[in-house]
Image 1: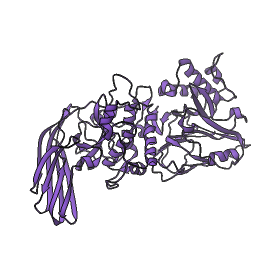
Image 2 (image 1 turned 135 degrees about the vertical axis):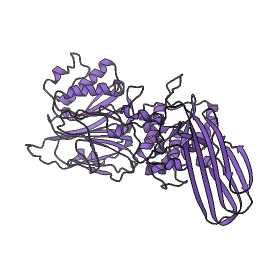
Image 3 (image 1 turned 120 degrees about the horizontal axis):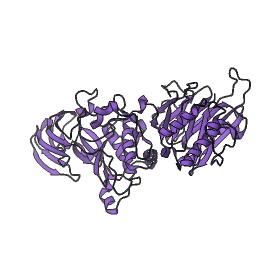
Image 4 (image 1 turned 60 degrees about the vertical axis):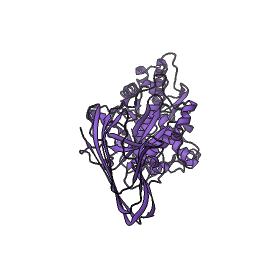
Length: 605
């Protein structure tokens, strides 16, 4: 059987393929091999396919795959080293057809019964007819004919369940490992007999291994513009010693922009994360989630070892008690200093402060006011020498349940770009400007943000929720791995950080899409039963997005959830410096400073 390879990137990429020298395999009497390679230049709906049904070794055609760096595409579909069923260009794979203002590609490994035409007739006036004589091309014509007859224009409109049913019916007539794409969705079907397995894996940056290899080819992923690309790859041969997962016989997977969005069978790496308020029902949840266009939302899961939200309770409110203690110690006495404290939680229609105490060990003049961002702020001027300054706040807060972010505008389907009235944009301008980074870095971050938009068919809410979950899944929570000066691009490149880094990254991505975003500092209740309580032992950070028909709504990219009963809101701003809990200036004395801080948060009722 021939070898298949499929690649799905989050952003357009330029992989390099080197076909190894042909060799005679056991039981083969000749070396009539062919290969084919299809892609969508620039991520458009127009596909290009190059193929050679009689390749005998290294030549001008194979050198194109290895040396031509101009083809950039989010999807690549390859048929490699297949013994030609007929040595003719019309019978070489992958097959390409035009329908519904897009090109469709199919590659097939296996043989189907001679009764294929009887089981799947094209009809006397077929909209699509094979150019060659292979069963593989016939299958593509039949699928497109069915779509045309029903007025469907993409796999998304058809729905993955029905597509899986069609492919399973075809599979009943023989062996069928199938790769299909409409330029947007990559569909992989594994033959039900298990005669030739298909292996897959999802690779995320940073890539320690960029050269993948099988007995038949070498795949290089080291193009200068591609170090930060995520990749979903399927192959009939594992291309490395990494942990590849085999599709089950008869299984179909649909992938979009490097993320599996639907599977006919649950897989460990395609389970959705439960929101904090839904965790109790997670055991009975489906492995994928429906969305409005008939496709599936990107399945996500919390990464192993990532701090998780606290135990969910089916209630409309929660009362939490928070103790936040910060202690500064100095090797020399501080003779004069000023301090700014943002420790009092927000009190509004969704959160009520039942009690608040602030204790400061050093005497000084205090003044409380509301800063420009609406934060309740206390300033402290100290003119009495001290070597230790302890600041302790105690809060009791009632949090009311907030509707999750799935409410669409009653006036229209909200899509990107989000349209603002001039006066709205003027008011939101501080929350629409991305950080000052080199233009090349902002362009790459914009491409990354747009990959979620493309994956979710420009749906605004789904794109934002997908980004929030993706940061949880694809980035590693690693304490002390960054500093306050770490930029969103550095977090994007390294794929690691802490809560403030993930918040800064999501803020940057949202602003590049024209969605106002601000930094929120507060606390998160993780409960006593979770394996990692690092977030509840310090202040926590997340993102709030402004949508015209909802207002400000919180997303927690560290946990991949929406903000609700587990989060206590304190201060907000454009970035960390606008919302930092404690800050100050020492005018005289101090020497070396040592900082100790801790947070204790408990359910009070």
